[in-house]
Image 1: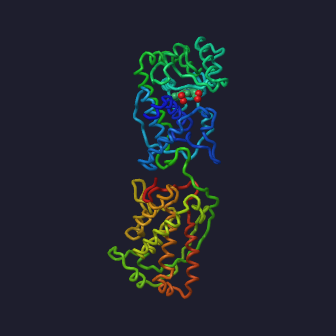
Image 2 (image 1 turned 45 degrees about the horizontal axis):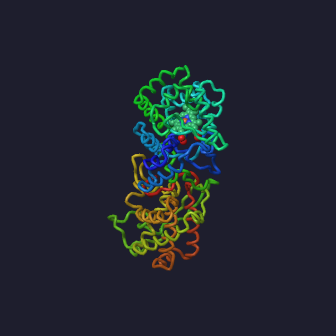
Image 3 (image 1 turned 90 degrees about the vertical axis):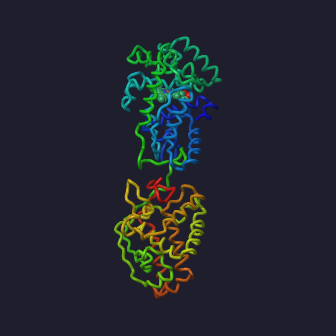
Length: 500
Ligand code: HEM
């Protein structure tokens, strides 16, 4: 903000207004920053904001810088709150402690922007009503309006006052009229006028202008028009420190307007767009029967003695075809899963996962079996959603520590390592759940059924290996469809062991 304000002091005013217009309609959630999509109308394009609210590029640039030092951690909503405080302070205004931890909205709300942002023709009763409904007192309104001590306004917003409004000083009205038409080059509504006599200084001159009836908006003048706010306006005009303290307190209050916290919303990676994936088109209730080969014996379904990892030969020679396990799923829903889902967004995905699994399986063939089991234990309880990969937090117990998994399911580090490689080629794009599914397929393919050392063992498992492999593959595709999170459900974790 130091750089931005040095280049263009007005930008501090513009960011302050951006914050107000983000918070006021439905909470400080960065919704105003979102570009329009086929799913929602943007707040940017609503009449109070269109061609008027500015500073989006500044917030985007700050967000990029923040992403470089703390990836996917700080919300756009918090960045606007901090930039606002810094901008005000850089123009000589107060500073305040910004409460942080907001998250970003998934959508914009143009209707709220249209309905709840006050207009410049409002009278005092309307202003007080609008702000009171959102928990602000008359004193807050009078202090917050002091924001008009910085910045500019388009002549179109006060054109009606230059002719026939009795609450404006007539000499000032004529001056405005001249300036608006002169600087407009014929398009008077587009010209800009300073909001007070010192538009690049955050001071209390605005209140002195109110007393002199030399302000731009009718809504401003309403604060000093023989009404209940007159005495407070006089106090602010006489005591800049008193005004600054009230303004800072009211800004903290504004920052508390309906923030999204906890698991609501998200931390966007780019402020102008929410992180979304394709929608769920269907959620069929199926009853699936899995014939699942439990051929991997101790290596897959039981804990190896002393937690040691037995060599493959031992593992497989000690096992036989134990059983075909029958699992009846009473509710397995699948959305729009597709093998080509990442073709455009992450074309290198399959190569990266395959190459990583080649390395992994070369070093430790058993890992193919472990990843296969990891996939099974992720999918089977409540869907293939990477939930098994999450470390425990104060908010939830981990599946890792559940008795069937604890000290038994393994391969988490392998998935984490593959995820890091994938993140390098396609940031924030591929879910951990999909990485497990691909690594499972590649591991099975590389180690168990591909002319490898286990072929003979596999042949023993079945008189007809092709028939087995086909059924197994079909069952695995089915397993991959178990309650996946798609559309706007869930998220693309940046690290598999923690939610973003
Ligand atoms: C009380 C009701 C309010 C009304 C009716 C109102 C209306 C307006 C209008 C019409 C503009 C001119 C926009 C343009 O020409 O593009 C403006 C500018 C501005 N408003 Fe307000 N506003 C109000 C309250 C606030 C509040 C509460 C804040 C912040 C706390 C604020 C901060 C600003 C700033 C800093 C500017 C100058 C922006 C720039 O130069 O880019 N306003 N306001």
